[in-house]
Amino acid sequence: MHKENNLSKNQQIIFDLINKSSEPLKAYTILFNVQKRGIKAPPQVYRALDKLVQTGKIHKIESKNAFVACRNTNCEMSKATAFSICESCEMVDEISDAKLNKYLSSFNDKKGTKYKRFNLEFFGLCKKCK
Amino acid sequence: MHKENNLSKNQQIIFDLINKSSEPLKAYTILFNVQKRGIKAPPQVYRALDKLVQTGKIHKIESKNAFVACRNTNCEMSKATAFSICESCEMVDEISDAKLNKYLSSFNDKKGTKYKRFNLEFFGLCKKCK
DNA sequence: TTACATAGTGTTATATTATAACAAACCTTA
DNA sequence: TAAGGTTTGTTATAATATAACACTATGTAA
Ligand SMILES: [Zn+2]
Ligand SMILES: [Zn+2]
Ligand SMILES: [Zn+2]
Ligand SMILES: [Zn+2]
Image (cartoon, rainbow over all chains, first blue to last red; front, side, top):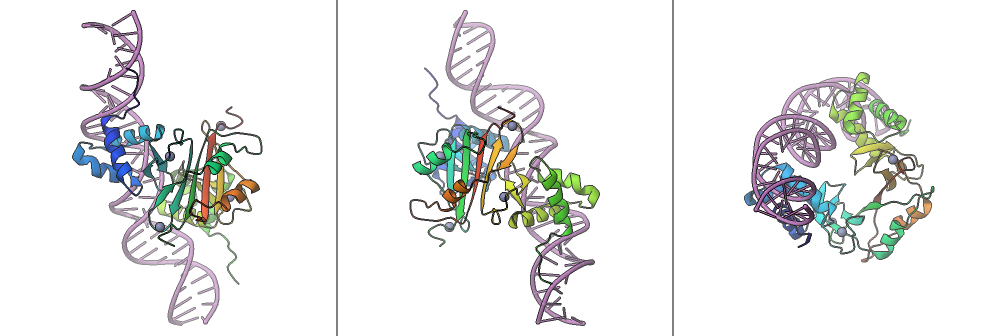
């Protein structure tokens, strides 16, 4: 039986919580919400988050220190991420735009350097807040 | 005499330090380095950093919690920033590419939403580390 | 089965990053 | 001068993240 790429117990608990949330969740909010399920200390949360980020199941919104579930089957392990972030409410949407993705994935700087990964965060007002 | 948009004493001290640095600087590294100049506590550093970011003199590298001086006269108060980040050494370069800037500044999502601001971080290996 | 490697867990303590709150000093300009 | 904004200095504390260590579970291969 080869590796099924399944989640461990803590990873699954934490992924489920993030996946059900309509907002990005912060590490200590997660910790508070999973304490009843036996996860008691920050390292348990951060380790699960690290693994989930590595495997592309969730993404970190860097400008918020918060985490969202990946809504995009094409993320290729978080190598190419783009988000729309509302500056008024806490809303974050993952952008899944093939043209944008292609444009950025093939971007070369002036010295011809190609990059392995990018993260793009757009800021503005969401539909509700406009 | 109207506002010259000059920096205050603490802002100038901290900007000079960041501007001379070849690497992104973290807030507490900055604090340590300016203590001999009379800046003794974190809020003094963070207030100056906030102001410098607002006015576009420096940018925050979100994935590193570190700050670099703006090398680009066209940044328009940090509304459109892009960086090249080496995953091996600490090198960060501000990307100043008119086409990229235009492409992202005029980007609409599927619902036609335009954004006020973006921040893009590319990751890879710099010339030296390749 | 046994042995080994790898990944995951639980735990305590601590490091790092950032802000709250309040009083005082300093400019502008009316 | 008085009023308003911004900057400063200061103490304390909040919020975010990791180090280190002992232990357990699981997969792989002889
Ligand atoms: Zn994704
Ligand atoms: Zn909104
Ligand atoms: Zn800039
Ligand atoms: Zn490098």
